[in-house]
Amino acid sequence: MNKIWIITRRELASFFDSLIAYVIIIMFLGFTGFFTWLTDNNLFLIGQANLQVFFQISFWTLFFFIPALTMKMLAEENRSGTIELLNTKAISDWEIVAGKFMACLLLVLIALACTLPYYITVSQLGSVDHGAIVGGYMGLLLLSAGYISLGLFASSITNNQIVAFLIALLIGIFFQLLFDIMGFSLRGGVGNVLNYLSMRTHFDSLSRGVIDSRDLIYFFSVIGVGLTFAQAMLSKRNWQS
Amino acid sequence: MSIVIENLTKKYGEQKAVNNISFEVKTGEVVGFLGPNGAGKSTTMKMITCFMSPSAGDVRLDDLSILNHPEEVKKKIGYLPENNPLYTDMPIVEYLRFVAEIQGVEKSKISSRIAEMIEMCGLDLEKHKKINELSKGYRQRVGLAQAMIHDPEVLILDEPTTGLDPNQIIEIRKLIKKLGKEKTVILSSHILSEVEATCDRILIINRGRIVADGSSETLRKQSQGQELLTVQIEAPDTEVKNELLALDSVETVNPVEDKEGFFTVQSKPDQESRKAIFDLCVKKKWYLMEMSGIETQLEDVFRDLTN
Image (cartoon, rainbow over all chains, first blue to last red; front, top):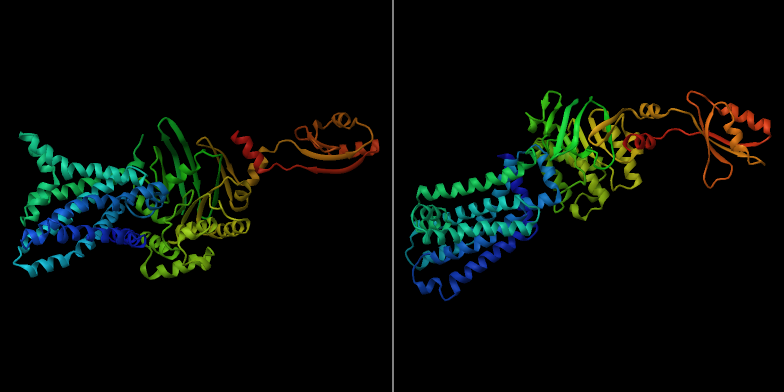
């Protein structure tokens, strides 16, 4: 646990040193703020004291921003050879992956924490369904965790950051959109499975304030699979040809 | 801490980068790996440091095997990889702290270890700079500092002096010699004089196999068969070469290119021809300007074994 935290701290420091953290947080607040408060479809027009608009915008914003966070995580280490430094120190592959995962998740958490004024504002405007808002934030966090683990996997298979970014988006778009669409058009068992695989299904039910163990199991499975694959790619050097 | 390497093999597909290598390094020994590019030096080091697992064979540090206890082995090894990769966005002190924490140095000792390393590697003037602001030589020092920060019992250095200027090279060599008194050191290099100056023992590797093993003197003696001399003779006639060849103990005589009056003389096995050459000059009334033995260089040994 201690070793994981050492990696997390370094990665977080590097986010803030390289300005990535500030750019991401400002852009996230800019996008979500603009669409939540200022556009045609804004919160005042809908006339309901909830954050559904914000959650829907964040759902897409995070989808695009998270690959930008994860792309350099392992790809850059592969390119510069620093992975050899890490791998020959007293730290396991799992701790390296987990540390990097935590760093990305903490940055997303900071960005989300910056939107708490939205919640405070809305709660001043009318009676708010607190459960739905807690559920929505939880959904965003779990969704982010899922995409971070998939992004880490994408970053682990290449030494080029742009390739890592694009692969993360490619894998992500299935969970974000395509499984959903295919799930609708296909009937029967396959349709149900695809529907279950879609992030949107689970995110929507969480953001309505329904915390169901099936949704939680889904998110934790995605996270687990992504991290396991990323770790397997790190350990690949030990596979025998 | 001694290192035992047993039948170590690494295959890349069909190609064997390291082919059934076995050797032992005792505590306090400084061993130099020599070999042409692609001979398997780095691959061997990568296996010892648990970066790659071997296709066959084992490496043991005292009783710890790299196969069963990689975590403990890694803690005992300080490794400077080839090309010296570093997190270039970090300041030196931060970077050393990061490495010390990962290697499990006690919290209370970290600051003093960092100060020691900065002193030892001569980084004092640059210590607050980021690594990407440093010149290559200073980066190499940071690489050495990070390898030694947890005071490991074993040091594995892959080409430790590349990119350093002559003064720095001498400093680093001194440092390695000093460290080698208590620690077990394996270093690789393609600079022969460097290996000769720092190592107690030399291993020459070629195409994944060990082709020579011993101190630089032993290796030189092994390959030095016949006596070889350079002579300079000032003589009026041009028959010098033939007269020299006529001596009993001389096997071959070759004029040195571009140098008038210089010859390389090789004696027959186990024979000596200095006196005979002198006597010949006296008899013929030639002037003997110079006569010196050519000692076999490590370069020659290396070239013999790896060509």
